[in-house]
Image (tube, rainbow, N blue to C red; front, side):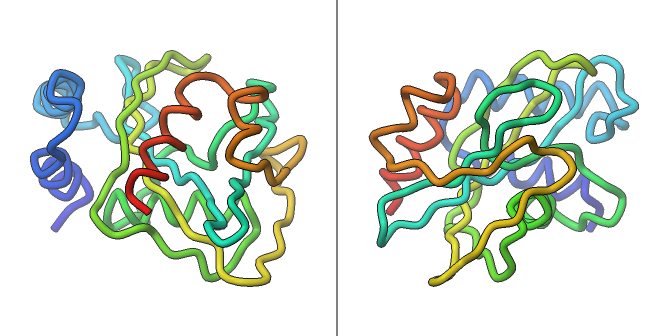
Length: 171
């Protein structure tokens, strides 16, 4: 199965946010290249909110270009077999944490937002950090920091807050 086919299957199976889900599916139907950064009309991206449930905290990255505290995530790559694999790859690369595991049940949320390169149609997952996880800053980040769940609203935008709320509802 191609990444495109996986994305369509994942989105068709996602039961929340029906209007936004339809926007994503329509985008893919109209853009065979809709998963790739080269698609100027926007592209599907994948992200992972790294959480540590026993300690009630979340790892955010201070994004180098956007200068905002965000979850780990970014563009799909040809080596990604699935959207879940893309999210897990991004989470691992940007957090430096080996052994992340995605929460079961597929994506937690969808979030469409404009970036300097184009519209991002982000498929958002949650990844659980293993016990004793040590983070390491990547080239894409100015900083990495663990925040208690109740601190996130003070540092991140509403999309991250909504993602954390949806993630906590799944725990």
